[in-house]
Amino acid sequence: MSFKKIFDLQNWDDVRESINDKSHREVEAALSSDRRTLEDFKALISPAAAPYVEEMAQRSRQATQKRFGKTIQLFSPMYLSNECNNICTYCGFSFENKLKRRTLSPSEILTEVTEIKRHGFSHILLVTGEANHTVHVDYFKKAIEIIKPHFANISIEVQPLEQHEYETLGNAGVYSVLVYQETYNQQKYSACHPKGKKSNFYYRLDTPDRIGKASIHKIGLGVLLGLEDWRTDSFFCALHLGYLQKKYWQTKYSISFPRIRPAEGILTHDDGISEKELVQLICAYRLLNEDVELSISTRESEIFRNNIIRLGVTSMSAGSKTNPGGYAVEPGSLEQFEISDERSADEFAKIISSCGYESVWKDWDKAFL
Image 1 (cartoon, helix red, strand yellow):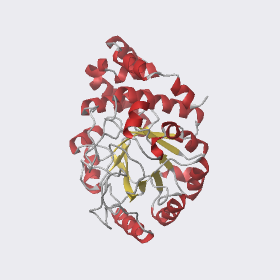
Image 2 (tube, one colour; image 1 turned 90 degrees about the vertical axis):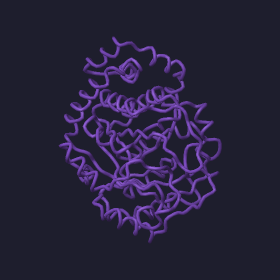
Image 3 (cartoon, one colour; image 1 turned 180 degrees about the vertical axis):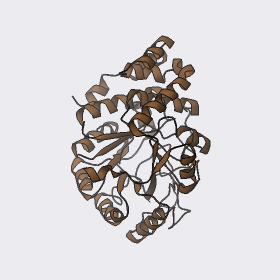
Image 4 (spheres, one colour; image 1 turned 30 degrees about the vertical axis):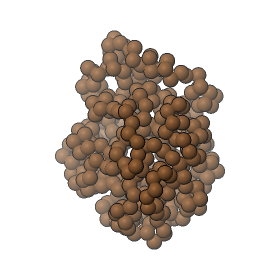
């Protein structure tokens, strides 16, 4: 059965009501369970679980240390292009935002690589807008050819591609692909994506399947927290994760927790999530799935990122720039969104160490493939 069929069996309003109706007794049952289900996950992200966040955090910390040790993997995002053909109401790269666009040339890519490497990174995430006429598979292949000698691990967060295109990029050196559904609410999705290829809800929904069929080593999922009710969206993301893990069981998975941030020319959205609720969500994912990698970006504040180190995350960006050329080529180009934690990678690594954790700059997993 495809995920579309599983998804279509669900009703957004019914799921939301089911989560909000969870009781303290159901939360306690979920916490005491040795093998948690999606119904347990509903309880753990429900309003009823708010008084139990401290206990959830303690259990999450224990589960994470058992599976991953006291380590935080560090990575750097590198924006190759801010060109985009989509209209997205929450993104600074949106087509209607008539500001300067740029796509890095091969020499500019190398300049950025040199600056990022200077800070010690061996993991890099390549990010672009969605402009198929400019940033396409041939462009990605050339960029990877330039980047590959300098980094142990290459991930991409670009427009959804076809299976054969993911196979091409996997053979070129891509280790993982991140693709966020943004929101699983079809009505809100259509309102937030009125124009461009991204407006096709089901094509995006099917993207992780194409990645899995292409045998990419890791798939990254997530929703944009703030577009819709975070609890309901997160349930659907967890449902998607469970489906993928059963079907592509040899693949690794990660969940990211991007919250909407201010950006040039975008609309505001009202379905926010507080920092305490974000902690609740992160811990709920860890208690549901001890193997999934959990990632936090520099969208979050310094204080929040300092405190979340011990509570369940395994991967964090640092010293990030969200504009093409932002590290060395053109620091003033259009950003996708404003970051919150502006500390350098070295400064953040010292914070990780002060928490009794180790910064992992290079993951040797790929060497064993």
